[in-house]
Image (tube, rainbow over all chains, first blue to last red; front, side, top):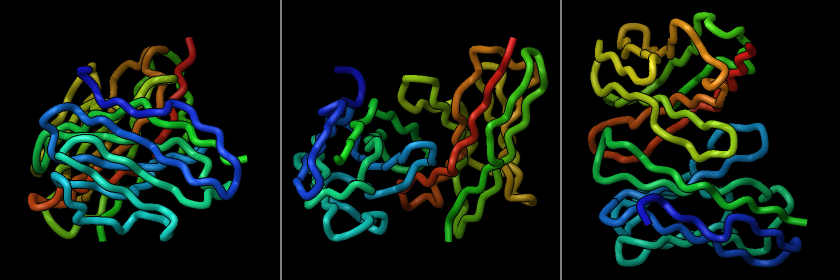
Length: 114
Length: 113
C-alpha cells in the first residue's frame, strides 16, 4: 500500500496478557517512530528507529515495553503483562530520511486493557 | 532539553474568525519546526514546516513563522472554516543529526457556523 499500515486496528486484551502491535512503514523510509496517545492527551514519544537500530529508547515507559525492526521495514511493539494504564492509541510513523522530512502516520492501533 | 509547549484548548471560534495557536519551543540545537493536524477520525498529517530562522511555512491558508529570537512558531489563519475543526500539534526535530520528532500536547480547534 501507499501509506503506513498498522495492525490490528483495535485490540482488546485482558490485564496481564502480552500484546504485539505491528507497523508496516512506507517502502524505502528509513526512520520509523512509535508514539502513544492516551485519551484526550498529546503524543507521547516511545521509540524511534533509524534503519534497524534504535538510537533513542528513552520514551519506553517500562521494561514491559520493547520494540524491534527488521529489514529496515516492519516494526513490532510488544507490551508484556499489560496493565490498564497501557490503554491508548499506539501510533506509528515513518519518514524518508534524516532531518526535516515529513513523517507519515498510520491510523493507529487502539489498545484497550480490561 | 528539547520540548514544545502549546496553548491549551479547546479554541472555539466562529466561521471566518482569525485564528492564532501559540507554540514555543526549547531546543539544544537548530531545530526544524512543524505543524501537524489530526482531523476527526483520521491520522496525523503534516500541515506545514519551516527549517530555519525567519522561514515561513504555509499551506491551506495557514501560516507559521520560525522566530528564533522568541523561540516561537505560532500558527495563524486569517479566516477559519468549519472544516478546519481538528487537533493541531506543534512539533520539532531538534537538530540535523537526529530524526527524533517531538510533539506538543495538541490544541483542539472547534469552528462553528
